[in-house]
Amino acid sequence: MSARRSGVRKILALAAMLPVLLGLAATPAPAAPTPSAPAAFTHPGVLVSRAQLDFVRTKVNSGAQPWKSAYDQMMGSSYASLSRTAKPRSVVECGPYSNPNLGCTDEREDAIAAYTDALAWYLTQDDRYAKKAIELMDAWSATITNHTNSNAPLQTGWAGASWSRAAELIKSTYTSWPNAGRFATMLRNVYLSKIIGGSNSNGNWELVMMEAAVGISVFLDDQSSYDSAMARYRNRVAAYVYLSSDGSLPKTVPGSGLNTRDQIVSYWQGQGTFMTGLTQETCRDFVHTGYGIASIADVAETSRIQGQDLYGTDIGERLRQALGFQSKYQLGAAVPSNLCGGKLTLGLGPVTEVGFNALNTRLGIAMANTQTLTEQQRPAGTNNLFVEWQTLTHASNPN
Image 1 (spheres, one colour):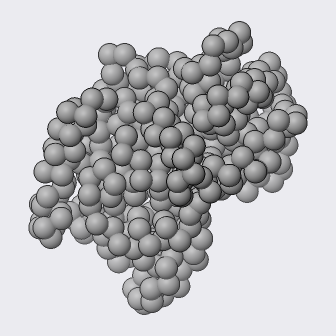
Image 2 (spheres, helix red, strand yellow; image 1 turned 180 degrees about the vertical axis):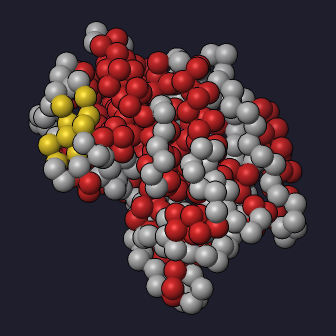
């Protein structure tokens, strides 16, 4: 992206956010535009771009912080081990909370390892890491046929998000991957088919499913599925994070069946007082809330790389408010009695870097609580599900 183009986008995004920054809450941020796949996808273009990774490589090679410590953390993890052996299964069966767990952890961790190796390859240019990523991906594409049991859509989203990042980076930057077509067929038939229709479960389910669907669509150069996933994502983000401009009740996803106040309050974990930045799962726990926030940011980042910047729209405002609201309480602020009965279950996780970088580093928006929490958690590692190494890839990254 040219510096001029980047500068124009930043000015437009700041202009869109200006009413909010000035405290004019009655003027909501503009609605996200109708999803539109680019005429030609940018590669690599799932969560990270070539310019972003070139920036990271320069920082790591110079020993600059926090990138060097984040790089050391990644390279010292088991996910970067060159002796790793894939554990593929034909059918991965995942019940509630992965019980039963028949290949669930193995699949997620092999997918995380493939993405870790892909990052390691790009940053070091040591092709042993590219070959290891390919080995892991080939093992699974030669074996897996389905996901089953109640958590199958969620598991497919978690693993699919990491697989698509790994595959996109290797295919776009490494010289030879003979079985790339077989991996693409696996992503389309085993993963995309399971997640593209979404879910009426808790919001973090559908958000990560759409994250995986968007990433897979970019890898496949599939404009139709990209637009479908982005449309569903846009509706789910609006229904996941409350803004006062939404009115007396949160928005709902079309077709969700939530038609009354009582139904909506029940879906929002019994929370009947709605405040800006509250999410549909805040009163459940911050762990699951963190999953939802991570996917909101990750998809917005991929969309930006693909030419449609959502950070200056209501999606960016919902992300900003969700990050700030949850960060405030994660840092220890007293919980008022009208919020989740005065008690929160914390544990937000390493999920703030992408959104904070987009809104603070690129757009210059002050986010005091989010900044404090983000810096405290550095280097942010992995949640062992689908979030990986985001201090390394996105801390203070202007690209």
